[in-house]
Length: 144
Image 1 (tube, rainbow, N blue to C red):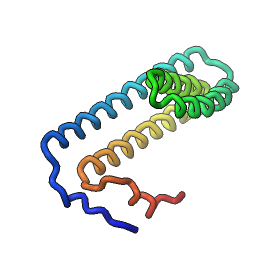
Image 2 (cartoon, helix red, strand yellow):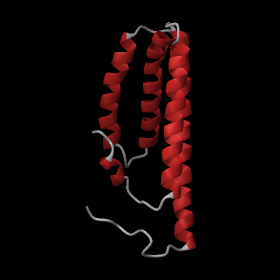
Image 3 (cartoon, rainbow, N blue to C red):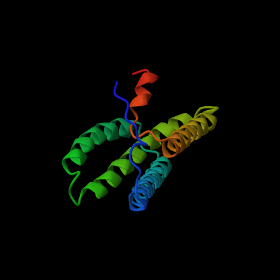
């Protein structure tokens, strides 16, 4: 495996600022899509659609992944991303209602939410503070 020394060439102030702007914009887009997905999940939970809607949304989402890949360099890519995340959130409504019907369903959902947030924050902090430019190091311990 080839090791890349990221400290070999010093970066200019403009390069660092451009990198920070890209990271900030990426996290802003991620936050907006997560909020939109949560809102559509809440709407779906309030509507209480049948469980088959979940399966239908998964099938349509797989189709949307290919459509999004085809449109990635067009004006329609951003609306497609929001449509995809909205559909995924709407499809989660029946699944969340199913778990909330259990005696400890709220605890299960909040544990999953908390662990997802903690792992995301931890990995983000690691990547932003480390000097590694790729995630190939994950393959050494990821059981895939």
